[in-house]
Length: 588
Image (cartoon, rainbow, N blue to C red; front, side):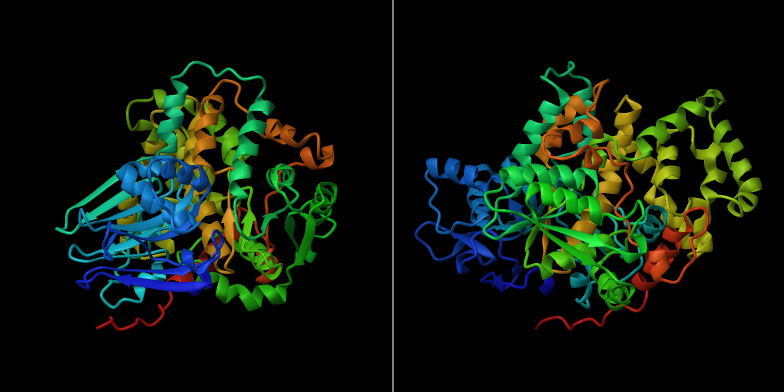
């Protein structure tokens, strides 16, 4: 845990020894020793704490909350956002989460009610894992911290293993271990001293989108004006820190627009970090020239880090260990976070979320198109289309996989529904391939427990528009369990906090009516926010993705059917399922 918090360490153990909270600190707000955690709020006129918290993250509206609480008689002894959480809980109880704007995972002990409150932010930017055997609950920000305890079992969780192979990440609430779960994003878990447990979801993006569809068409001056107002407000909040804030700058629209807005909102020049790869020089994938142009125009302090094959080989083991749970993505974030740390930064802004909100992925076009093309199949008697599609796959799979992606074998079996089409578009290995990679029984049990298609269906079933269905899936699965998780582990591997202004609950709720409308804001509308600052070469550049030349570094030859990512997935999976690190003996 040290890399997650290198600046300070603290612990608190209850008087009866039955509860302990610990914390490693990355000091960003209130750098003094007053901000060290766990932090307690004592009972009036007593040295005993009434509330104790261990908190990971940042609360961007903590100053407004502090003003509100002070007006209601609360007295503060620090300038930290952590202390705000204690007083806000005292004022509002569990409803406190409705007032927080930020990223957070925390454990709060309420001594008066003898209960432990666990909570995660709306989109799950910060992780929280727990092992609950019915008599003891253990919590941590990383799975590996829990595995150091001998009393936490390591029984494989088939749904977690299958989830990784199908999606390229382990979807929550699963991990690779049956005894360890992830608290879902936007959820609260209350554990009472008597053993009673209560979990509830307080924020669901799909539900918000579905409710927005039922509202009247929104009225606003223009889409670009709406985006400009909400984005400036979000970025201003995300710049709140007592240490310098930088930005990850690629050649893409999302980070370029963020840089333009942040340079307007920041009081001091920002540092911009860009990765370069010699393998991509003078190609469309080279991010450096356009990022350099953007940095020059905006007056940013530009740092370019050239990542070499030797650096990749030297750091690969560290990166794989830092993943905690396996994922096929994140090496780009790992190396750009390393460069940010070397530039002296503790905080950096990232453009994660732009493609999900504004339809930047091909999935927004391809999935509805596929479902419409195969719509006649849905007119067949119940189950007939699936049986015919399954027969086609069984007959044609071996031939198809030798020529193109094996996904095409499942086109007629899965492609006529949004859930199935999303699986085909986003899936890494298809369900029928799993038994070739892992034990057949584990593959069967894992797919049954994961309920892959049902899981996707729950994300969009109450949404009418096809584009909005795709948005709900991308927000609730790909962004949440892959992009946001990689931002956490890759940043924390270098003690860098990655902030995502486009993944902001208040901004999302404000934009939702426009996002689900018949004329939603697009990436072009988003790009127009920066048209006064940036040249057309930046704003109209086709999307290429933020890539790392893994295949070349591993000495692999790119093959058809997306095998680069599949080969890397096998490599990551082999590392994740290798012999685990030794456990520590339990404390006396």
